[in-house]
Image (cartoon, rainbow, N blue to C red):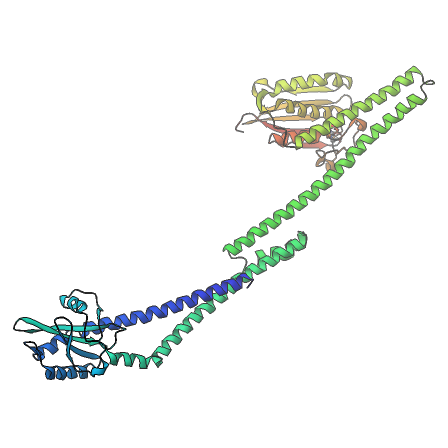
Length: 499
Ligand SMILES: Nc1ncnc2c1ncn2[C@@H]1O[C@H](COP(=O)(O)OP(=O)(O)OP(=O)(O)O)[C@@H](O)[C@H]1O
Ligand SMILES: [Mg+2]
């Protein structure tokens, strides 16, 4: 008995049998009570009529003849009636039954008194002198002479005749029919329950096999679509919104989530591998170059001129600077990616910060003859952000604009107050970004091939850092660009806490 279906069926069978048996017992018991109450009520006056018919006791002397005559008459009218004449103590004075069938010569008077006092719950049972195992319903009436109670007429209703009759019809047609009907009803109920359980557990079994198939297919996406999803979602049975249907739907949702996470993990793994290969490539190139120059310096130290030596050392220094920046940027990105960085938000003037940052680049811009125009109004440029991280964003964007704008170009930066934010726009007249590259410029290590900038100093991490920082502020950066015309980066910062 391993399956849930078998367990449920057995439990159902037991319940049905229990109910059937209890019902049978209750019916038999109540039928008897019903019969007894009706009999006692119907015949309650039988003893009274008999006693009123004749004087049965006259000054302590029993009129046996009259009694046997009356008893016979009563038994003819109702054959289950057995009449006894009792004295005031309950001793049987006379009766019209075969003396050998008497098992006692006394009748308990307590029920007799109770019946005569009236106001009793019927059926009320008393002694049956011919069957001491079982009490019977009865009728009783006092025998009075000259106002003195001489004794009682006690009539057992449903006496031996009734017992014999009841025994003889046991197993009769009616009883068999009743029993048969009960068995049929109980079996029918069991059958219906069995079928219902079968249907319900079949859905569970199917669900289980779907789950098993899904895990056996190693959480395969095609399996998910072909097998599980289809059978859970679309089948007429599974669509129901009962508990099993909900379980199926919940599992489908879970399976989808597992699948998505699987895909996500695969993607992360791919990115990680790409990152490692990019990092190693970016580290190897300057390291190899540095190694070459340092080795040349060592080998040819004596024959190199001071000028050449200085040039070699400068190249080596440039590479170390590049390596330092690369490592710093990588470290910063990984810090931003982990949950350890929480922007410390505060109110500050973005216009002031912008002024400080543009000052940093003044010299470089002057060298390239590039104009940096700033249009902002300090009083409407308050933002709620992390000032150090924002400085990093502006630096990266301005550095890019300078790097990718040829001599004589210009960079314009504007701050625009919106309802609950400040929009920042950094536009240049540089080389621009090709349409196909636009969506990828924010990717790590992405460097466009088509620009004139110095690729040896580029890591392709600047914009990735910018996007990550703005992510942390709940903001998105967008870029628009035309090749050879210029590029414009745009983002918004909240101007107050609620925004
Ligand atoms: N203002 C711009 N004009 C034209 N191209 C740009 C501009 N800003 C970014 N790009 C393109 O996007 C690429 C990615 O920029 P990002 O700042 O991430 O890297 P990078 O500047 O190449 O290197 P890093 O900033 O790490 O030193 C650049 O290589 C460049 O091709
Ligand atoms: Mg950059």
